[in-house]
Length: 374
Image 1 (cartoon, one colour):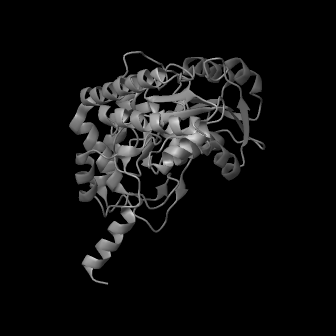
Image 2 (cartoon, one colour):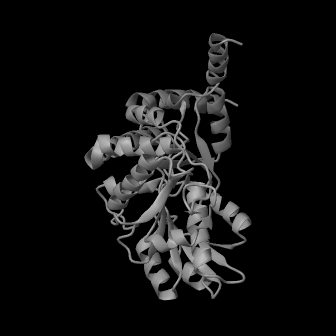
Image 3 (tube, rainbow, N blue to C red):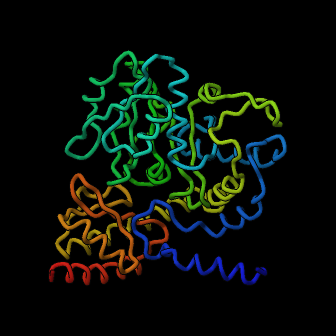
């Protein structure tokens, strides 16, 4: 095949994808235009061999410092990885390696991401899930009761996947200090939302007990995929992850994957430099405004949110959640559902503007009418 035929072939597959303009389920979004340009500039770089890509490695250090400043510790340690799953794995792996016990366990809320199931399997760590309070935040008294001599870490969520709720990380921090265990905060989504909100939620390195934080620039940071992030309080956590790399330009490697794209680092850096914290705040405010619009329109139709949205994630109670999702998908609109309580879930990312919200509501009305007619 010649180049034209190959490109046309690729385009035919791409057209089958549902565009982000009809996606209200994903915590990823269209990358910022400057992220795309930066990605292309660094497209052949491999951070798995930092002695070759010296400038790219320096750029990653600058990016980690920028994010760290946002999280009250610009001298934190960490790196850019494939996403929240890898970051959560590394956060718990470091805790496990720092506290060697025969039968390690971690205590996590029921609202924790499914990546922790993978963590249990991969790392051989027992997962202890604890219940939530009436606001769907982790029950800290249950956490305290579940900790034993084999507990290596406890986990808090800053922006739960299903509801966008924030656990009482300050209380978990006190427990972690008292019980001498690590505290990993999964802020894959909320990490680049909460700092720009008017209402403050303590969740980061400002709290003494926080050991590590997952934060993903390819979500609200609008970087190209993949650009997850794992940040640690200090270098000792990275040292606990090191393995020798005798044939590379570096003697040791602390990352989970070997080959790592430098392009996503460049894209994340470019967005934060271009927008600055003030620009990021404006985008968050716009997402929150459109979330309020969605809630108001859904309430007119008789759908109430499970909780008043904390950030730009909202779920609406309905016994017909799966049917609504299926009918919308047939019309190439994508939402998701949650099981407890039964609800439909939407995420208002930067690509979701007011027009998209209103177009979705019109389609939603038609779907509800068709379901009620059955």
